[in-house]
Length: 384
Image (cartoon, rainbow, N blue to C red):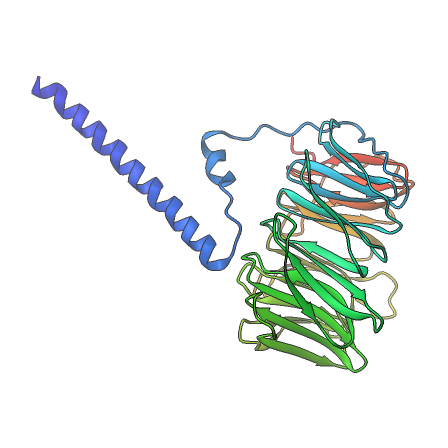
């Protein structure tokens, strides 16, 4: 009897020890994600025990949303927004959502499982998931831009009133307005809310340069600090996983910490910015040499501005995207898949005629969608 009990006790100890280790790893990961404001994603853990099956993609995805279509990837679905409305298809081509929604200049922003479609220069806003509409509204002022964070909270920048004052309004995940920032001067180009719903940053263009006022706590009347850049244009910004703001100017990338202290994240030097990707912690710059045609460099940075990979390019790059661990580059002469070391990979578009396409959208698992006014066709990395 005692001989049988010892293996059972040993087995229980092994199981208990393994469970404790797994629990410690998971709790450590959650704590790290909360401290760094990174999204919590357990796909790395579940894939150990339940490996994902390769995704199946239709030969062509058929969208019927009118002209001026824009596309985005949303958690295993493709979103299309056009002048007639919004449509969502899964990768197999099955429609999960169709909404009639008139827009003269359609735009769409996606984060995690939720998206916002909006009419630039108009008044219409639609917030939705893959299978349902969450909220729709008409703004009082003219929409300049909109963005949505990973929790479904969103911001809308508008110009309204007799003096065309600039406003950035924050809405929670139920569509209720919870904060409104009045800039008093200049033009609100873009506003973005931090992943933890606490901080609001706005690109404010004035007659002397660019400013980024940051409200630290969206119940505060005045900004916690304002970063100012004279005689230089700020084109874009976003919150990095480490909680800092990365601002994109015409000459450099700038990091701004929570105390308002700024540092040059990466300087373009004698090059000019041709394009930028900053998605899921991946940063890719396309820098062009002045006066040398399309010659330039692709540079991958980490979130501290250190160069992790670099390659020379002479292609006329017209669109770039990142997803599933791959960069996808569309140039005038074809498509390129690059891994995170910027090594080029073979793919199924080598013999494909790419006439009529002007954008590329990276999906998951080495699949990309090339799109144009009349086409939305997938291409894949060749892994065998």
